[in-house]
Length: 143
Image (cartoon, rainbow, N blue to C red):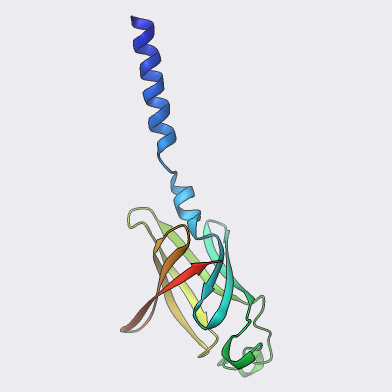
C-alpha cells in the first residue's frame, strides 16, 4: 500500500511540473515572423533576455518604399529598411503577462513610439504603440 501511495505521489508531482509552461516558454511566444500593418514583415528574436524585431520583407509597403526616407536624421534617409531593427528592448513581465518597456520605429512616419505587447496567441498578438497621450492597439498576424 505504501508503494502505491509513493508511486501516486510521484505521478502527481510529475504531472504538476510538466503541465505548467515555464516563464521562458510564455515569454518566447512572440519570437517568430509577424505581418504588421502596411505589409511590413518582421522577425522578432531574443537577445540578452530582451526582444528585438527587424524588417525582413516590404512587399507592398508604402508604394514600394525600400529606404528610410522619413527618418528625421537626414543622413539615414538612404538606409535600406530590410534588416533594420525597428523593435528594441522589449521585456517580458510575468506579473502582468505582457511585454513592456520596448520601442518601435514606424518607418511610414519616421517616428519612434513606446511599445508593449498585451497578449500573444499562437497566430496573433496585440501590440500597443504610444506617444505622449496617444496610443493605438494593432493585431499582428503570425506568418
